[in-house]
Image (cartoon, rainbow, N blue to C red; front, side, top):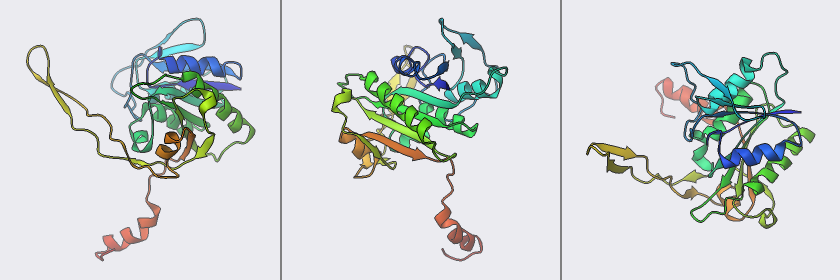
Length: 255
């Protein structure tokens, strides 16, 4: 088996190292990761400047001056043209949650999405760290191994991406796995205004809001109960249930 690994925290991130070490006994690993932290990059592609790919270290480890989506796109669409494609894409381990609406911004999830766009099974792995976090990357790495083995034994529907969030606790304190839906966050905190050294205004995006729709069945609820949240994602954003109403609305009638 061949696994392509990427992330959005950058090629030197602890989570990426833990994931690579954990999956190495299972498969031939190729890492293609951004040259710096690209958290929040979502599904962006670099189109206006050329991308450079540099080897790093002694393994099959490559660094790209682009986004997580760039990394996966390059790796599958020609960077290794003389070789068979990978069998799977695994992204992470993200240093932080990708719960609820986080998935729309997440570079970690975007890397997995790009893998699925290009026809491969894909898993996004995140460790839900907190202010006093123990950074239990080994817990998330062990969960990643279990998830990869499950997908190998029982392949999922072709359109499925797995968004996996792992509580930041020792592995022995996990209370199992739970199939979840995405919850929703409260509105984010206000922007933070500051000044640069020359007195000019600068702004920071405010912190993400806490869980709003976070009841039983959601990814937020699973994490709060020390359970691994596994959310199947799909790319089709169409609100199919509204199509008939939309047709009537376009014809001038109230839905």
